[in-house]
Amino acid sequence: MKSWHFLYLGDAITAAPPSDKIRETFLPLFDAAKNPKDMAVFTRNDSEGRLHCEVSVYFSPAASEVAKAFDAKPCERPLKNGLDLLAGDKNCWPILFPEIKELL
Image (cartoon, rainbow, N blue to C red):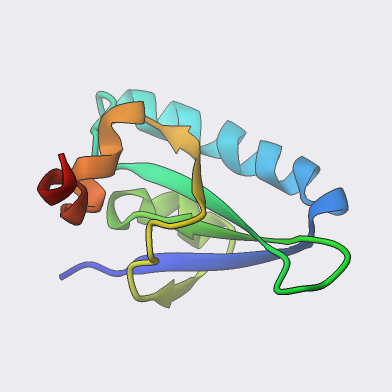
C-alpha cells in the first residue's frame, strides 16, 4: 500500500504562504491527472491547549509527487477528525476515509 505523507508547517499565523504554495503546486498536477478523487491534500490545526494553533499538512498517496516536492515524510493515514481539505476534489472523503461510508 502506498503511504500518506506529512509536513509540519508550524504556527498557523505563518502557515498561509506555504499552504498557498502547496495548493499552487498541486493544482496543475491534479488537472494533468484528470482530477482523481483519491488525490488530495489536507490540513489540520492543532492547538493542544496552546495559545496558537500549529498546522500540519497530510498528502494522500496519490499526491505523493507534491509531497516529495515539499520534502514531506511518510506517515500513516491520519484520522479524519479535524482535517480540512486544502486541495483536491471535495468528494474525496469517502474514498480516502472509507469509514465515512459506514456512517452514511
